Length: 295
Image 1 (spheres, rainbow, N blue to C red):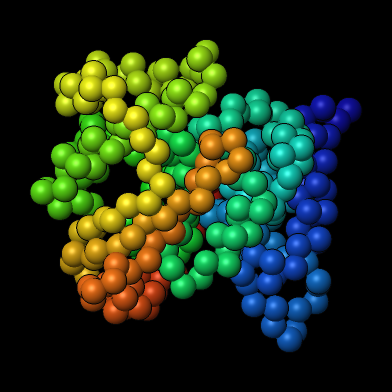
Image 2 (image 1 turned 180 degrees about the vertical axis):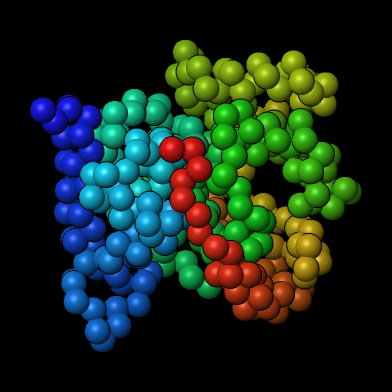
């Protein structure tokens, strides 16, 4: 007799196939090509968008794969532009609890993903109000590195900023004090906007108060200010110092932000970004895809 788990995994595969079939390649920034046999996405294209190996994704569609991780489900939901209800359904089919909104597996609204996909000539990424990176376009990965692979408390860049010296290498040392103060003021504004019982923000703040005397001192100043636009200087490992404007588009509830980077006027950043579009994305494309290591 077939187990309940087997039935669900088979339904999961059928659901993935149905969602894949409805998406046109152009909707997710992929070329249509003259020889396509199907109107929707191919399996290898979904795997590419979700950061999975083709073999692993094929197993999921056949209903023969092992239980996918919450991170893989979130990646598939984004790749397939699922609505919030469809994304929750995918978690149920995979026998995984639906994660609370705000963490690394947060659902990104399809409209915000669509806008991100259209920003092909400038680095852009979607983050939460606690600075957890949810998804990046290739130019953003080339500019600041893959920021979406961290889990647990380390998923928040603010947590890494105050607890790991490696996180600060992205910025010149002369800018660290200004960035620290801006991160703390933004976090206070985000935490106040959330429900007073919100455990995620409370846990992040409590951990930073315990781990970082610098954070504790700045938190005691009670400064509050959302980061809506910034002038940033970034240390790129290949191109050197790049001066950029960082602009933010906030979701209606303030929980997510679309960030995009534009060259600062009066600098050579425009030329450096053009060079990044060639060299950086080539390096990303050369990186082999692997199966979900947490399954």
